[in-house]
Length: 444
Image (cartoon, rainbow, N blue to C red; front, side):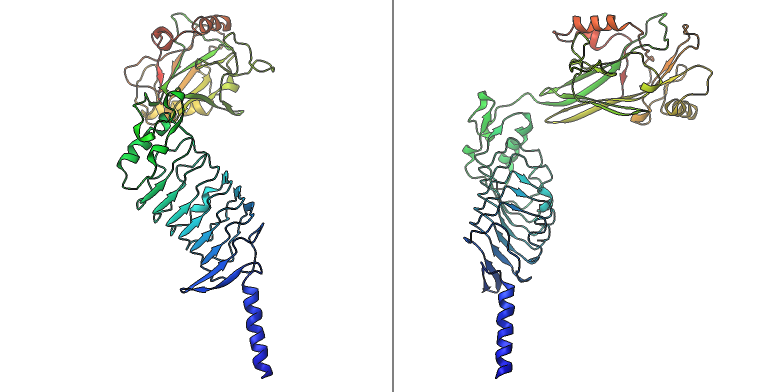
């Protein structure tokens, strides 16, 4: 009799340890259920049995979900977290839940969500994230959710949606995305086509509307008028030679990046020199050539019209100059490699040696005497030969298209270049500035 009492006590003690004190745990319809709703909890309590399949933590005061928050319950199939105070879901908070089928995070304050949490949830069928403060969804957020059939994102702060966001959801049958403050620009035009052709049900489509621009405010996304949209294109050029021009040490290299696209692309210069990498994300000098910041004039002078000046160009400025343009529809890039050498000397750097090596092989370079199609983008090379005595002995070579003549660099003074730039600053670039005669385009 005493042994039986001890056994019963052990069983009761084990059950007590298997269910956190604030919660109710039990079995129903073959499922192990832990009910911790309406308990005023401020953290996920420890002590669950590993075979719990349904966990309700709704209507508590959870402020966040830390990494490993549910590592004790790897067999969860349903997790209910609605009506908490969750603002942050850390990376690794949900990744252990590979069997999860239903996840409810609605009616919280989530603005910081680690989307990597969804990568391991391949069994997920229902995802409720409505009534939060989400402003952005990565293009690949739902890449692993092949079984997802219902997705609720309404009443958030989403301004746009990346094209292809819902493409991985091949069995999606229900999408709610109404009551978000969408900006109806070129980046969201794709959604109109997708919404009109998808087999998924999209309730309240008249409430899936634009909040900006003002001209489209209140317009349902499915009734957007055509917008003038085009992805970026880039044309990278540099100044042409003139007959008799001398290339002496200390000349100015002038590059021009002509960008087109709608909406207007953002321009970014990426410069790789022997001394390191320089990133220029916007103009750093004004139309008059003076630095926009309080510091001294920058070594690489970027203007708002796409021009880049490098005064007193020398060996430290050798390297790769890349112009990148980005808008909502994509990006484009064009690069040129620039190297300096003195005729007859063997002291050319890596770019120079690569140029001559590929020229000898008959591929990927352009010389004064021989034209060869470039074999890849990195073969777009400009070799500038400087005369030892500063005379008129100079030649240039660049990667290009057969039939073009190699351009040079115009050794104008900085004041003249700035004068030309300023004179065209407040009007569209005339054809002669965008495409000077003899000017060659660097290969994208």
